[in-house]
Image 1 (tube, protein in one colour):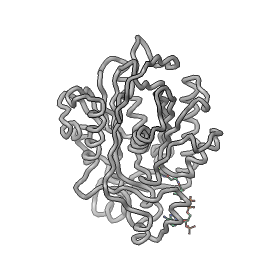
Image 2 (spheres, helix red, strand yellow):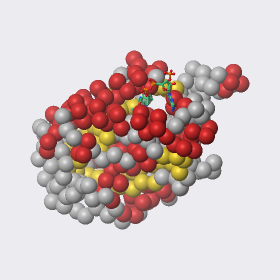
Image 3 (cartoon, rainbow, N blue to C red):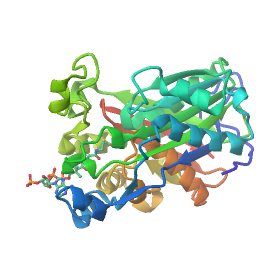
Length: 344
Ligand code: ACO
């Protein structure tokens, strides 16, 4: 949607210096048209709509077509965001794509997006922080704006998780979906300013949620394929526990940095993994889930794309108005976590 400029003073930011601000000028998102419902999954694995709904809140997810790749979805979301901002692709200085499902190991998906959208002047690289990728990319993009290195940064979270999910493993295949979300960042003091973005990681639990094969540790071979090492693996219970703790502490850190109380936040846009995780985070932060924007019932967990798609839909749904404070909070494999506060 088009984001009208507003008077923006950014009084709380510790990152604002020399009159420079990092604002989200516009956002855009894209999900594939193919809908796969819980009932359809129950035909291919031993599961049910009742199990998936009660354990996760997910009802359906979008799955990309065979010829539709992460770079295609990223390019569509990016084009929407650029059009809404009335910024031409050749004004983009830098493209950051957060993804764990790149089109290929190299070149980066960001380079493919650069070509697809015609952003000829832009530098481009991928960033990997699993489900926390979009907030990591926002923080990195913000640094380039604040340091005056670049004026226009395109930040994208995009995933084709269906390509690394084991469709015969009911523990994981019901959880994920495909999609992309994008944001255009600029120094524009009268617009929607990023007050803070923070990120963290704990590599000691890397094996809890990972894709073991395909890198230099377990290169692709007949044996690795037969052992299913190229599929996403997850210890659901460990991920669940760490996600709740990590999202709560990331949210509290972002609030502390801005000297804000949670009651001052109009809308919380959390990583859309699981309704029970969101409920537990809400309970710990002592807020109602009404204060959260939730669309996981439609898309499942789209990893790095999740909060970007949710932010775009929250704007469309008019859940965010000028002057509102918005908290985005994420958690993912690595483990990684992060939070960002935007004064809309
Ligand atoms: N349908 C039916 N039964 C299932 C399914 C399914 N799709 N999946 C697992 N089960 C079975 C298990 O086999 C197990 O059966 P058993 O008792 O006979 O062994 C039973 O259900 C209970 O399994 P649990 O793992 O105990 O179920 P739990 O209540 O922990 O819920 C879930 C599983 C939903 C994965 C939960 O642990 C969770 O949400 N974890 C967080 C995972 C997540 O969101 N990951 C996303 C990536 S990280 C992130 O984005 C934050």
